[in-house]
Length: 364
Ligand SMILES: [Zn+2]
Image (cartoon, rainbow, N blue to C red; front, side):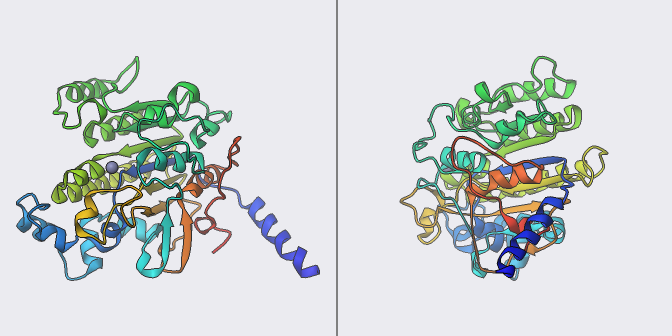
């Protein structure tokens, strides 16, 4: 009897007393980028396949091939597999039983992003054209907290983020697709970004811009407006995959890794952010793999497209590197994890899954 109450009490008091050092959080997603490439690097079957290699297999092999998976994955994501591996945690390598999955039944974007930010899988959200999110996102919740109000911004290459994050109701600044950066008082850099954005090639019409514009608009906001919470949603990994362009898919992922390094380098030399910022990186869904043609696609008819991954690094996250033990984690746990890192408990009128305890100091 004594033992039964004693253990939870210690646990609770340790948790309550562990003051969070995270004062800022930067959340990054790269749409539909598979755990297979994150952990195993380039797939030689796809690089050899003339339907997918864009006539460039020699470039693919000279750029991304290596003697083993460890070498190969580092060629796509050198920052993830150096700094983040050495200072943070990387989840989702199913070869070691580290399983991360979406819990929504659809395995595509709007349901995935909604699950990330609302903390639950709302089965009514069954389309990428779904209207403004009726549920509360953790960003909207945090924007109601005194210390964070007006200090949250989101930049997304895809125009659906206005609806996913319910920009109208939440009051969060959401800059998506071809919306100009900088609002009513753009900096000189933002004016230039906006000009280039307007004149750029638009392979996905008005729905989605190239990631380069989203990245630099977000970067300028980070440097000049100093948000406490910043979300950046890159989209090219998914677009190139749908087109069957394996070279472009890998190049987009490599560029995202490079941008994450740029963000982290800035964070670690700026007094507001240095050693007080957590970075959280993930994706909205997986893609096919078993049938080699299915890597281009994802939905609930594509086997394994529910499989995802995530990485985290920051002052409250002990170094664990690549997680190599048996576990089952879900995308719906990210919202409460984000809130807890910021020192809050996310509450809403819908269910919210518990935070991921692995990433905090108090529990292995
Ligand atoms: Zn897609």
